[in-house]
Image 1 (tube, rainbow, N blue to C red):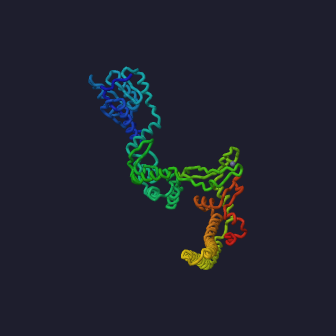
Image 2: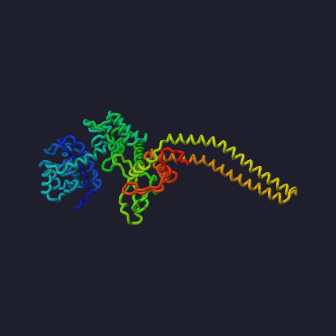
Image 3: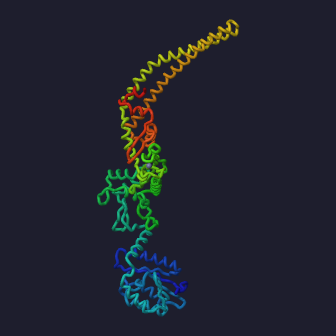
Length: 507
Ligand SMILES: [Zn+2]
């Protein structure tokens, strides 16, 4: 029963009783807005919007209502009038006014009453209207609907219908949000530290606690609160409720630019880091039960309060032969580091001892080296003299100064000498390599020291280097090292009973 609305002129009638106090004015606004929306939807032609803050409990208490009734009573034939109102109780809550409206409907002076959910037409049962307007003494609308409506209107007017966030206060007198002079600087500092100074939430928590910030109840403000604070566009003047944004009337504490920057920083930090994972122990450790290489896996965990992403490395048997139960157990990298650190304790030499032994050995090499140089130069000189002799001999033979027999026997002698000299020169060069060997031993010892004294503290990449230098393989069973093979020269060091015995090892 859709009524032809196009020719009907509507009065939009909104009323709220003054007895309802505080929420009154607001609800009247929101009611009006809702009614206008409905009129838009139905395509109703509103000729007048009437808002009245008067009680409808007594008759003749509402001047604007009476004015409207007068217009209706004096309606000309070509006019068609309707009333748009929230509920029928807005029009009347007393029998006199109810009867007036009822009569106007009955005689056709009023064509239609449109409420949010119903249409009342002249042809409708008069009794129904009576019953419904009689029921109007009760509040039909549920409270939550009213509140929600009120909130929306408040937001549309730039007000915040809730508790003021950190940095602001609720001004009870004006029902508005005002800046809290005691805490606004803290909020500004949080945004500055986070967006401009690249500080983490933990650090912010610590700093602001030291700066004296506490909750209203006097407690410490935690990371999670700062996290929420940083996400509130409220601080740059934008209010968000129910997925919609509203422009707030309150004074912003930060600029939109700073707010946006903080959001970018947060998005960046929450992005899972696509960094390559170092599985320092991969390839070195094997399952002692089946002999398969242990594989590395990463588990990423997001810490709820801070939003930080942390990764943990685990190892487990690849079970390549499908017959190993050990693959079900995961071995945390922390545990591997622990057992390896224990293993490398055999190398916990005194670094100073190594350095001293190295220097002494180097001194000796230096003294030796002078003799070596003389020796080598002399041999080279002898070789060159030998070659000269051979050349002269050849010249003499070609000039027919000597016989072929003499030439051949003399040349053979020289060639023999040459071979001996060349052999001697090679030996001298071998001695030179001793110096390089010394350096090599020293470096190996230093690596062993690093493994023995501070393996745990090494960076992932350094751990990997040390492991590859020291170990061939390392068999793991039940979270412990079952067996291992050391690379040379570390296997020699392992056998050496005396720690820091440089001479022993360099031999
Ligand atoms: Zn296995």
